[in-house]
Image (tube, rainbow, N blue to C red; front, side, top):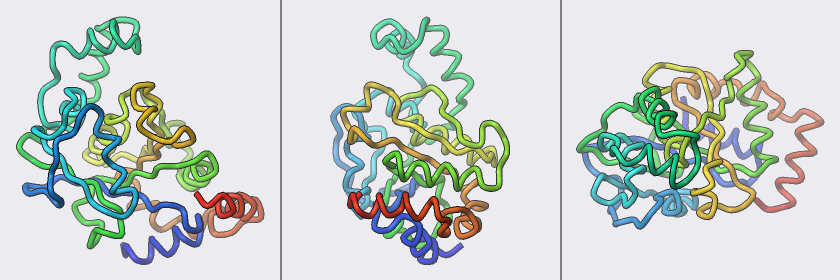
Length: 238
């Protein structure tokens, strides 16, 4: 797979909309690490704008963020917090069940890196891609994901925090060589940290290896309907 060709194909399909960001782990940070306060999603803006950001267990300021990136075992306080404080699940047991079923692999001692795909050399060693999408862009991404996949969960919206929907689900799906893609950022706690018209769309590399070859076959190649949507994306400048 050629990164430059994909960027060209993406531009042909979505105009000058922001490129996706790649996510990967490494022994050394790809960029200087800085301490974050609260949700690290709000610190991804430099990557969305063409740069690179890196974190580790010491620089992520949220216990959930440390957990869902695989840097540490879940705190015993998380289930009660998510259920009784945030009111996102009916009982702490349901939260515990979610975390157990997620089965995020340990990434202890590593760094996690987020970078615009313009900044990576290749797709090798990448866990997946994260798109920050408006409804029109999301329409294109979902259509692309469904082009060659009839499975009912080909596009999935599982429960989870902003960091689990953009990190954990990618990593676990890629590890399992799965074919699901994920719409995320529905967590009310993460919403203040992204634009009001933005959701995430995450593609693990195990699926992107296939989707890379189908973008120019799908409606994104210039179907009459998509041309109208692309025009609106372009006119809005986003």
